[in-house]
Image (tube, rainbow, N blue to C red; front, top):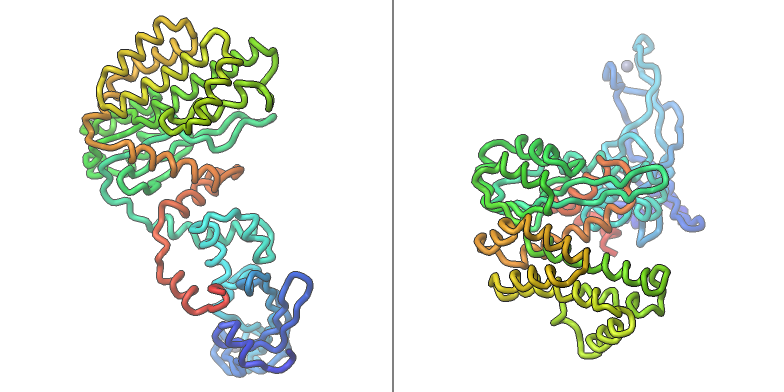
Length: 427
Ligand SMILES: [Zn+2]
C-alpha cells in the first residue's frame, strides 16, 4: 500500500495525520505518516514560517489487532520568515504526541491495560514494542494523576492487612506493607510501607478526623501494632479479628504440624508420593467442602503419615474454630481450647495461646453484624493484588499498580474516548 490511503489514515485515527505507506516488518506494522499541515507560524514571533526540509522520528502507537505499530513520522522542519527572529528553525509538534517514544493515546492505553486489566508491565511493553521502563513511565505519568484524584469518601468498615510485598532473597529481608480496604465495597483504599502501628496511624491521621470518626468497624490482622494503632486513632471503632484471619492462623499451625511430622517420620521434606504431602491441600480446605473421595484420601493420608494423630489433632482444632463461625456460638471455641490443652501438640498449644490473647476482638466479630463474606471478599482482593504486583521491587510502583487496579474508577472520559474512537482496539 503506497498511496495516500484514506482508508489507512482513517484506521490510524490520528486527526491531522495521513498514512503514506504501510508495511509489515517481522512482528510489527510500520506506518509512514506525516501531517497535513502546510502552513505554520513561528512559535516565537508568529511570522509565517518557511519550509525547511523534514526529519524523521519513530514513535510507538496502539497495536493493530495485536501487532505492535511503529509510526515513522516525517516531521516538517520550519524556518522563521523573519530573518531577525532569534528562533531560526523549529520542527512541527502535535498534541497527539508528546515527549518520548509513544503517542499520547498509546501511553493512556498502556496505563489502562496494566492498571485496569492487571496485565504485567513486561507483557504490555512487549505488545507495544517498547521497553519495560518506557511502559512503566507511561503507567506512572498517566496513572499517578488518577490515583491522586481518587476520593476515599466515608468508610464504615476498614480492613487492615499485612501484605508481603517482596519475599526474602539472598540479599534482602522480606518486605512488608499494609493494605487498607473498604470492607463494604471491596475497594483498596491505600497501601503503606511497613506493618507497624506507625504505618497505620500516620495514614489514618492524614485522612482527618471526620474520616476517623466515621469508621465503625476495623478488622485487622492479629498484630499488636495494628491493634494499638486502631485504639489510638479510631476511638469509636469496634476492633475485630475477622474469620478469615483466624482460619489463616489455624491453617498456619496445621501446616507447621504437617511439616514437622513429615520430617520426623520420613526424615526429609515433603515429596510427591509422601502421604502427608499428598493431602496438604485437602487439610486446609473446609471439611464440609470435601467430596467423599477427597475425604477418603484425607483419611488414608493421615492413617499412613500421621502415626501419633498430631496432624489430625491440628485439623480438628482448625475445624472447631471454623465451627464457631458456622454456628455463631461460643461452644466450639471452648471445645477448641480443651482439645488444645490435652493434645500435647506444641503448635496447637501455641495457636490456642494466640487465640486466647485475641479472644475479645475475635468474638467482637459477632457484634459487628457483618458476615463472613466481607472477610472473604477482602481476602480475595489481597490474593488478586498479590498476583498483579508480583515481583515489583519499588514501593511507589507497587502501590501505584495496586491502586490503579482496585482503587480508582476507570470510566474516565479519556478512556471512553480512546475506546470509542479507535476501532482497532475493539478488534
Ligand atoms: Zn520568528
